[in-house]
Image (cartoon, rainbow, N blue to C red; front, side):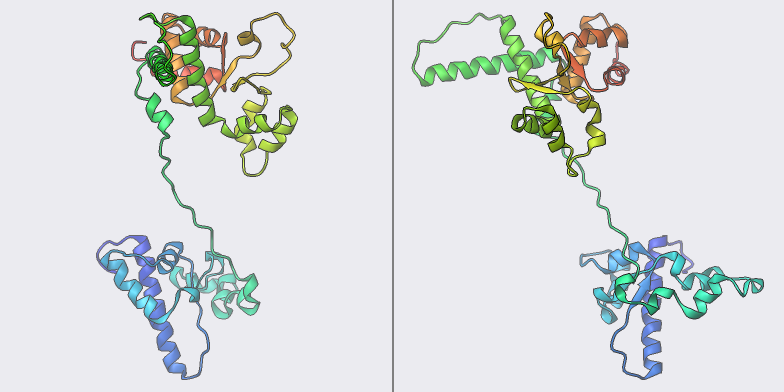
Length: 320
């Protein structure tokens, strides 16, 4: 390796260049007709660079130009370190270990070279890191510092929608009070819940719309394209869909309790809307502890993994 400190991926790329030059030298010395040449490397980074046609920095680009001059992309293959004979030369073997498997591998090469190509080592899968862009709903909700402010904004939007509808149909405008009614706040709360649930439980809501029976909906959601383990805490609640809102099912259907008590509204554990609701209940309850706030929330809502979620949000309360 050069005297100047250099990273391991660059050193592995330099090894590939040396291997290419040695291969060309051996082919010239043999002076025979070779139909095909295959190059093996255990460096996934060098293999990835050799198979990608894009602009690199000067150091990498110069060495890739040497590699691509003599060998195409299809000639490069991956070999794991266990079957790589070159490791015996680079790491060294003591004379007392003449009968070691590494010596046999160095003298004879890996066993798969004597077999068909379909049993050759497969290239390890490549993984890509994709940045998750926040949705428009989350960005909109994150602009509000409290749940009550969000309710007021949505209530004003509902009033404006009603005003536009009246102007369109040329009906006489209905005079509204400057103060919001309880019904307007409740409708705003339902609007918040619907957008939060649609963002977090879209697949489950769609399945419940197609299959009213919970067992059929569970079978539809539990397909390989959906992670069952991730949604298991929600499935335990046996959710039902009532007027477009996802609620907890259960055995209280025939009880005389209020509908919100029998079937609380389900909310995700980690969401901006859930955070605003928890902080609102925390302030209304006089900055009480986790158990008290969770009990107040469960009068109408059911947060998935409620205790840990409420404790998580309450730990970020600056006043406490």
